[in-house]
Every structure is written in C-alpha cells, then in structure tokens.
Length: 193
Image (tube, rainbow, N blue to C red; front, side, top):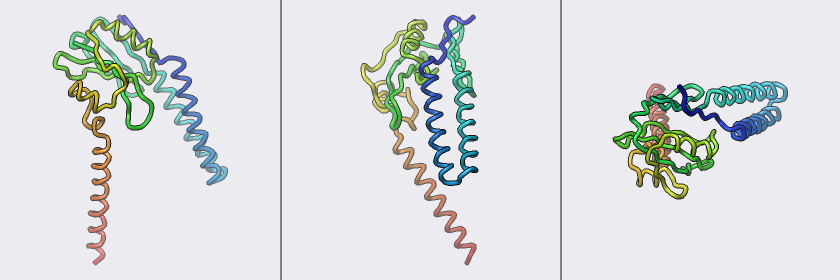
C-alpha cells in the first residue's frame, strides 16, 4: 500500500514543456533557414520527438513510499530500495557545472552508501519537505548551496567521482578521443605507405 506518492508539480511540468517548445522552435527556425521546407519538416519532427520524450518522462516520473519500499519511477528506469535499509537523509542544493542548482535528497544506508538519489528538478520544495518528513529519518545537509566536490568533502562517497571532478573527466574523454584520432591517423598512414 502506498503511504506517500509525489508527482511532478504542474509548474515544473509546464516549465519543462515550455523549454522543450522553445528549444524545438529555435532548432526548427535554424533548420528552415538552412534547408527550407525539408529543414522545416525535419525540425518539426525533432520537436515532436522532444515533446514526446518529455511527455513520457513527466507522465512516468513519481516517488512512492510504501511500508517496505522506497520507489523512484523515471521514464525508463524504476529504482526500488528496501525501506528498512535507509538510515539517514542528506538534503542539499547542488550547484552543477552548467545549469540551474538542484534541490537533491540523498537517502543513505547504515554504511553511509547512497541508496537513492532523488533530483528535485520535477518536484516542488514543499513536496521534498513532505518526503523527508514522511521518511522520519535523521536529516542533515549543508545550510547553503554547494558544489558536488564540496558536498563530497562533508559526506564522503555521496556523489560519484565524475560529478566531483567534471573537468578532469572532460579532459580524460578529450584526451582519449585525441589518442584515438592519432592512432587512427597512424594506422591509415601506415596502410597507405
């Protein structure tokens, strides 16, 4: 039996659709200016797909708390965790490298490992407050917005390495691609000799 169910708020759904329409509209305008009628048709098709994906995501997204489970539904993935494994909650406003700050709820186990991470993008702050109160677990968190690295210093293992070190990760990917290009160029030049 579901004790608490949180759905994306109407305001967040509206904002997501408006953003998708604006991005799709700008893409369609650019495609139309560059390719005429075929660009218009391609732009409209891509906008329709973008809106469809957004609709499915917001239709499926919800958080459910039952007597025995914590369940977070997404568009493609449903994450279930045993409620008995939950020991504490960390709530933080996380500042990403790009994009808006996100109110985030981390449900941690007895070993301080993260059982669930709930991004607050789709939910109002009041809904997340209700969620934390309903769980009835000790809740802590920084008193101001923090980066992932700052949060990890205060709560080790709470965010993945990639999120703590986004620039190192980006440089590693760029270096990997460059090494791949150099290796491919070397192979092509060796074959052509």
